[in-house]
Structure formats: structure tokens, C-alpha cells
Image (cartoon, rainbow, N blue to C red; front, top):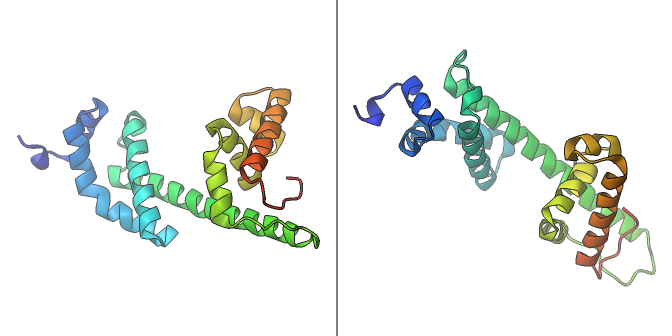
Length: 183
């Protein structure tokens, strides 16, 4: 029997065993609907495509968590919705951070350095060590405090503060030539 002729439940059993062709068949059956779902939330085709791809990877990596109580499409759609909403929130927070940084910079009348653009700030953040990027993103974009960071990053309080301090120093080095008030 060809994979195209199999029921979704049969394909999912194959997916649980990392059967690549079964995963591709599941993707083929659901990707258009999931793309539309993501697009309705993020309003950007490239972002929706990225979210859809990431969501399928998440679904296939967590396929054992799917218990079959609801239909698979509904389960997958919930993953898409959560990732889309999180992406939308992240975008808003990043824009807010850039605006705050620009506002802080404009309060310094004698500064001869320019303020960073959103893209420059994100590029500098992306260039950081992944641990530093993650820590700064959680603290400044997600609004986590040190106690929450210690839980998420599985560090003690002192190590967490040191990590944030080093991450800020690295970001300042990457953004040398731009005016900032203390983060």
C-alpha cells in the first residue's frame, strides 16, 4: 500500500519511528492549511513559512505526545497557533526595545554617536554567543526577572547575574559606536 493511500493514524505510527517518507506525506497533507493559519496571525509570508516549518519539526519531534484524542490536524494547528502568537509577541517586544533604546539615545543631546536601527540591534544580538543571546532575549524581550531566568536557564542566581552581565558587555562591544544608556 502506498503512503498516499494510508490513513493519517497509520502515517503517524510510521512518523513515530522517524519514517521520513511518512513525515513528508503528513507534511504534504497539512502544510497548506497550517501556512494559512500562521499567515493569519503573523501577516508575513516568510515568517508564516518559517513558523510552519518550525512547527512541523516540533510536531515530529514530539509526535509521541500526540495521544490521538483529537484529530492530528487540530493538534498540529495548536502548535502553529502557539508559535505564531509567540512570534508576533517577540516582534512587538523587539520593536518596543528598539524604540526605547532610540528614545534613551535622543535624551543625550551631546552624543555624537548614532542610535542603532532595529535591524542593527537584531544583527548584533544574533551575532552573540547563543547563551548570551538567549539570556538577553529572555530578560529584555520576554520580561523575565533573574529568578525566572535561574529556573529557565537552570543556573544559580549568581551565575545568572554573571551571564547577563557578560552578555550585556558582549552586546555593547558588538554595538560599539552606538549611543546607549545602561541596559
